[in-house]
Image (cartoon, rainbow, N blue to C red; front, side, top):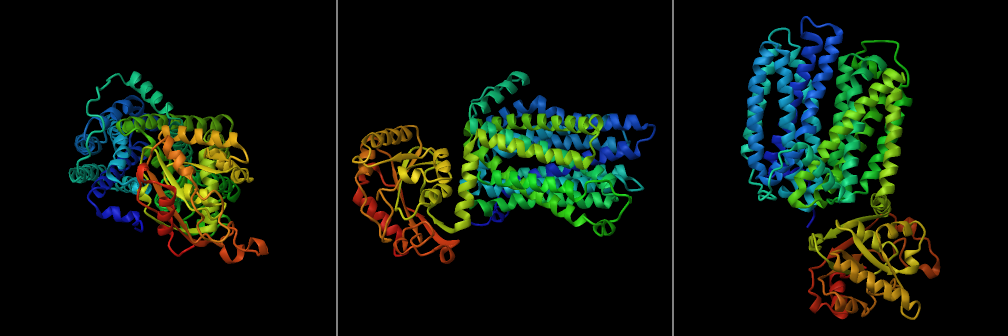
Length: 629
């Protein structure tokens, strides 16, 4: 079955009410925050410049403080209670907060509004673990990347629109505070209405006992994610995204005014470009990843973030002479279009970076503790954003860098951090290389991918046509596969790095290296015992005719040691491709006529170990392949 577009989810009750609830929440937060900041900076009477700066910084701190204090508790709530009912409770709290804020805006009561800003941060803290913890319950595994992409798209568009609406309403000559007050109350009521339409999302761990001590629970949650190396480093990657993004996001107003010489309309244009870019990258992830959690996109995103972020400096390194430029005047300036292109590219690749990381954390976390993992990640996010703000202050005020230089330093730091993360988790780089190789050389049609079990051990058997077979199968299946392969193929340069990182198992015939053969069988048995997927090519060698060779008895030897389900797979259309042996004796060049060729990958139904003979599995693979060699 051909996977449907992610936008189909927006027409389904299992997703749409949640999507609207989270988007309206982000929208309302930013209407409130931006209106309050503009009220402090431009509208409040009796405040000098120093007081305005102090209140602005206090507002930023009050909003982020609850993420440090209450994320651990909110993660426990999201695991213990039905997430849909919890969302409704959070939205009720939002209504109460905004009703109080109504009076704050009516009377321009800054202290009351700051108190409600803290409560808004608390409400967002309570919703955060629920927001990402609920997605694996609402969506199928193949929908997880698309769903996360839609959530990121909705979030950043909501941030953009909320920021613009808050500024427009509070800046009205008459009754600006009144219209902001009305807007935040109405939006919170709409959020409650959408939350009421959410279907039930049963508790992951209803027997959980709440630890009300936020400090001990925070430490417990951080230790929880440290116990899963891949999840922990993915959380660090997400937090780095917020470090990187918060610097660009917070510096945009100064960059637009002081560097580009633009009017507020130019700032709005930059903000729109930034938000649309992240949204575009987020929704493109599903198409690029083939409807699966493809962490190979993470290095791809990091590379683009660094290149476009660095070029932003070279596009416009010094402050403009003119000030107050309109959008048309700005776009007529030399370098303006390059700035817009770089900002859009950097933001788009940021989407490629963040969406697979969120999906990876969700898919590889223990379902009973998933929300607490998200809560721990939120704590790290808040910490990294505070560090980003501190770094910006030091570099701008102490080191005396200008804004373009600060952005260049951030882009360079992104490259350093990305390289460090990828050396710690080579799986990211391995998946990136395999993703680039496979998607450059082939167009793959996939059938029956759902026959691969979501958890537990299994053996996958496939016909062997080319040196790329393991990369194609391994790059398509969502779970990691430990392939058994002939030792000479295992040693091919470049591919060797990928195979070693994927913990492939080299093997040799008994007459060639009996010790290696026995080690291979022991490694296979150990992998299956630990619940992993093992992939083998039972023909034992590449086909030289395009036909499937007889399957050898090694398959039965493996199952005799460890009975596990067997999934047959057929590669179709690979014969004659660049890395197959067709025409090899004639030494004909195959690249021009088979570059980016269309191939097929078909997964059959799982077969019980007691019924899986070498001859029987060979017949099933032949049937799956059909006439398309």
